[in-house]
Amino acid sequence: MSPSIWVVNHYANPSALPGNTRHFELARRLEERGWDVTLIASSFHHGSRTLLRPGIRKPSAELVDGVRFVWIPSRCGYVGNDISRVANMTEFAWRVWRSGWSSFDRNAPRPDVVVGSSPHLLAPLVAWRLARRFGAPLVLEVRDLWPETLVALGAFGRYHPTVIGLQMLERFLYRHADRIISLLPEAWRYIEGPGVPRGKIDWIPNGATIPPEIPHPLAGPVDGPFTVMYAGAHGRANMLDDLLSAAAVAQVNGAEMRFVLIGDGPEKERLIKRAEHESLTNVEFRTAVPKTVMPAILAEADAVVALLEDTPLYRYGISLNKLFDYMAAGKPIVLAGNVAHNYIEIAQCGLTVPPRDPEGLVGALVKLAEMSSDARREMGLRGRAYVEVHHDWDLLADRLADVLDEVVAGPRSGAR
Image 1 (tube, rainbow, N blue to C red):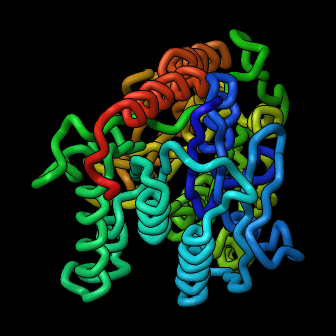
Image 2 (cartoon, one colour):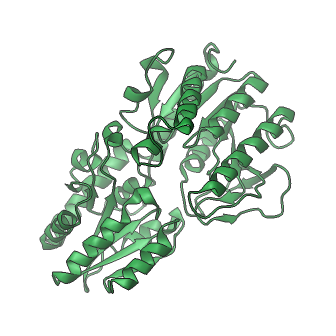
């Protein structure tokens, strides 16, 4: 009988939808390696802010491309990062907590291991509850450092009661997890502490699917302006105001560039209005697209960009989904940020500029535009080769399977 794993991820979704597909990609491959995987996710889709399964009133199982999802019904929707989103998080956690007590046995086999995935800590908390309920080990997956991210981005002060409460919950989960998986390469420096030894923490980052035409990435356009593309969320942390400022600088300087922003998020409407108000004729907005069509979309780009806030938070590294998609597509990248374990510098697949510097960003893009197409192509191929060796989903699934095997076979320490 195959060992069973339950993954509690509020925002899990299949590759046919925009958004983070990490657990869907890993689940498909774990199934091939003999695991029975169940993804427990909300019926409210974070990317599109819509209900995926509007008619369900109780946890409902569904096979999506061979992966079992258990959808948790949601009545609390949201648009931005306000109290309605907090209500959505709380509702998800409460429904999983309540349903988990009576068990999901009608929807999935009993778990041999439970994974609780952040960013918000209520999902790992109910995963701990499920692990205790079924006597299974708990694996805590840390995608973002909460509440450190909230403090670093200025949402709360260091000594706000919400932050103090979340820190207590965070340390509780670190101590009670049997194993911790971090997506950030240096996060162990933050997580390690009393009751949390370094050996308890594993690094399994995000990955990408290499398009089948490797080693020849899809060619960019031959004619027309130099196309700069951003693909991802349109939220506060994505610093897209800086990208619009860079577009304004390029337009004033007469640079032959167009900027294409693909995705959705709480900041998108405001960004569109800003571009219209400033008459940025070199900016185009598009809706979010599924991961399955992203390589074809990125084929239009001559260069791609990722932007980060200027914050010490990134001394623990990053694991941006878009970055690995960019690299897999074989496109030269400009990263505006100051980060540890800088993938762009390690793979030599683009240029890095300081954060919050639109003129520096334009300068880097002009430098790429002045390169020959062959030089840009070689730069992109280096990124693609790096992803193939270090961030291919098959490789990452093998690493995760090894961790799960060890957890299931080892002594139970944290979940009880």
